[in-house]
Image 1 (cartoon, rainbow, N blue to C red):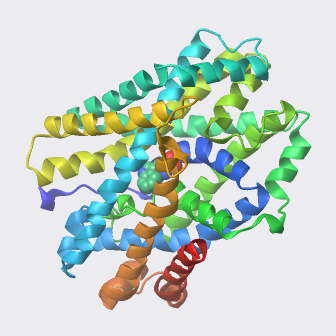
Image 2 (image 1 turned 135 degrees about the horizontal axis):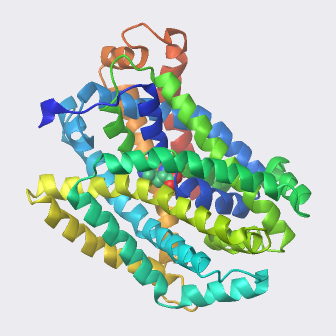
Length: 445
Ligand code: TRP
């Protein structure tokens, strides 16, 4: 099986696939609420800086491991034969994926409920107070549990049938559609009364708001949004042709990803400020602000149906790529059929996502270290597990990987980007590992 690996066709194919994994709830749901909680513009500035200086080089690092080995995460580290310790990175990835999926399924489940509500036209005529009350009622009911289990089951069924071209084709159609809708919504939001305040909040940085915690959150959001730090891009790198240029792919995807997150911010914050929602209101931010906005727009019902449908597609194309890591691991390491691997994954993730959903209910005791179990999974994966994964990859490529292999992978055997190579090595060897380590130290002293 190993010698008949597929590869991405042309450059558009690579960019679409990488962007398909990257663009998800992270951009549209997570980015606005994390930016809102961390003071807006100052956070966004850091996020941009970190995406360029840290995330892009880590993405190249993951690509080069994958393309050199042409194997999955575990297989790649094994093939490099640099000692058993590095296999741990593979296990860490599987663990991280499970933590991410636990809360990802809950939010994806919410999108399903919001599709249903829009179909029934239940947002119509509601103001922010009524809508918030209804939303809280929804979170306190058992419905989020059923929706997230349904979403998980859908993932498992499709994955056990084998992810065929259908999903890829769907995402190629739905992703551009989502983009166009987001653009439309952003333009529409610019005409809301709160637009000025919102733009100031988003783009006028108040540097006094920057703390180590904010830096960590920016790093975590950047990794989460670009699907880094857990080997997804190692797998994708293994499908990239030798002639393809990492620099082009990486920068295009990063810019597109950041741009979509900004658009989501521009679409959401004017509504937030116009309707008096707190920008710090957390994970619910998008689900509180947009329906109220839709309710006041002509043709709002149709837009609302389409928007949540597209959000659901963005979510499911990302969750497939995540779940596949778990399923492939169970199927290959325990030598069971994919159907069984899916069943096992369903049970484990079903329990953990149910706990996430229940922990958001008012008065829930499902807390870890003062955070709800949901927030714990969300926070720890992005702000701890992904940066550690990224750190290990940087150390591996900077210090352990064969130098010639690294050079050849990054420059396509001396043909492209040789001018940047020195800077790249400096970043991946010193700056990136040191800044991640220093960040963790400064947060813990
Ligand atoms: N990047 C996706 C998003 O923004 C989520 C995601 C997919 C992810 N694969 C990942 C996050 C790998 C971390 C690691 O929604």
